[in-house]
Image 1 (cartoon, rainbow, N blue to C red):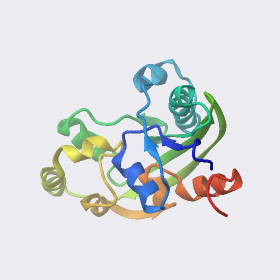
Image 2 (image 1 turned 180 degrees about the vertical axis):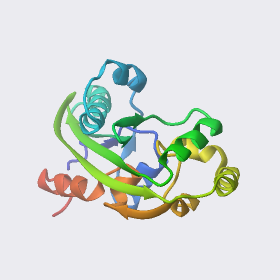
Image 3 (image 1 turned 90 degrees about the horizontal axis):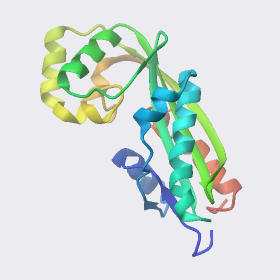
Image 4 (image 1 turned 135 degrees about the vertical axis):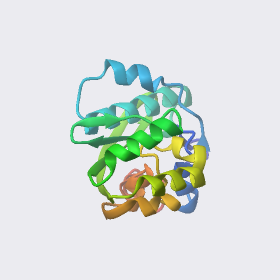
Length: 198
């Protein structure tokens, strides 16, 4: 990658930023102006397709301003038995969402897209299956009191890298996918494009 060509993360997610930093990638952050709610309302497709659609929209919106810089867009959609979930608006909604997942397996659909000159040049989606244990209502109240509003930043109302791990009895899938950035496929694509050393 030349000095002029930068890697740009089109996200306000601290978790995604920390994953890129942890991988040793130099990058800049430019939050995408995309209205996710409006895009979701107009979209009629499955969870994989929605996650890809949102990731591409974010990457292309920032990339249109950044020219040859390589822009990373990412999004995560959660589904359970055909229902797609959004981030909870408050702790009461978070409680209801977690109760609806109790004893069930849900899927996290994590999509990533790369864009240059305002156009997507690559995208993919990865899935993780997470089974929530049959916790008690009292335990859930204690959990929500402990984590507070932090759960509102995650579509699943948990943060696997923290106390949220106690919600689960089984997890199948890549850790980075669960955190919302399929990092290994991204790194492979950056190597393939000569943006990082191979």
